[in-house]
Length: 187
Ligand code: HEC
Image (cartoon, rainbow, N blue to C red; front, side, top):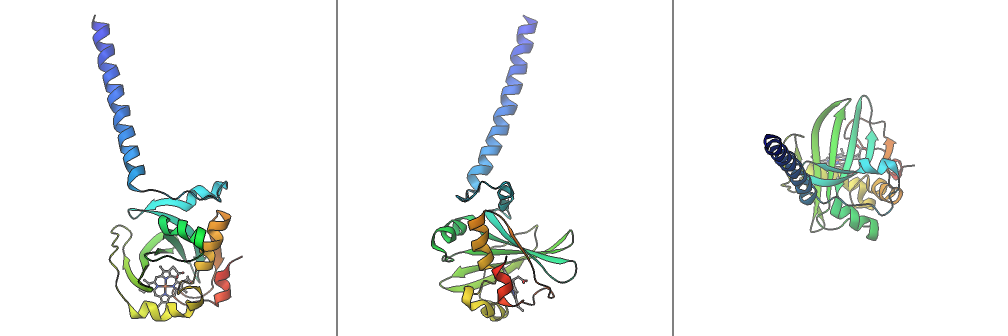
């Protein structure tokens, strides 16, 4: 009888723990739908589809700049799906730029398309903020890339989605300084 009680108690504990674990896992999956790339089949691919800063994002490019500095680019997964079918950046497309000094991450910059204009903001990695506004200083430099919808790395995004792999390039200039637009065509 005692063994029976012990068995029941242990079964209940095991049952509860596995139920709780499955709840939290499926909760996460539901909150952040992650776009599955139809062009996948590449093992590198798994690293492209990430949940970061409270969103499902597609990591599409790394740009190595002068010194110990590099930048990583992401797009929200819903817009990635539209880009891969239409080849254009849709309204509300959200582009996210991480800045890194070696292993140390610094400010995150974002640009979001609103009524055919790009709105901007920045935040610290631990405290994402998605409110955006018109910022002339961001827009004037990004206008250099007007042939690619004011998004320097848009050609790399299209290649990443078509190939199912993050595109890596080098632009040997200081942090914000652009390279020749041909560099952003990638390899
Ligand atoms: C002096 C030029 C310049 C200014 C000013 C600038 N950027 Fe950029 N930005 C770039 C360049 C160049 C890239 C492409 C990567 C690289 O080579 O650094 C880029 C890339 C980005 C990207 C990734 C999408 C893309 O266009 O490739 C985001 C997001 C971004 N910048 C946000 C911002 C925000 C927000 C501001 C204003 C606070 C800003 N940028 C100001 C030059 C600039």
